[in-house]
Length: 171
Image (tube, rainbow, N blue to C red):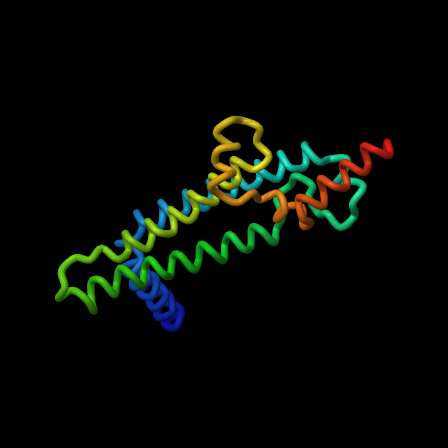
């Protein structure tokens, strides 16, 4: 019985130490989680728009893997990205408060999370402007990348060429 008591106290101590390291960065981590979840949602919406626009061409081309659904490999990448950003924010916070405290408050965790959120923001804009016929999307496509090629797995120009050939031969 003593061993069980010792192990439970040891586990509680370890959890407490880990929480003490993580707790100051929770606001930054929450914002990063929100950004990556929003990016995931907009990527799914982009995938649905691409599938709806090119449904017939996708069915005729077996190399294209777009089906308008979330994929587990994309979710595992998202979880891996979240783990990396969590560790980076925690590291930045503790470097700021232990190693560089003589320089004053640098707010490194704020900068790391802000840069990550800006990257996610650009990705969100790319997702929402891809295969979107509205005016703002056409303007944004001049500034950001079109993700159609990435989702389809083939060049967009090749797909348009296939569509034009198919239209001329009445496939």
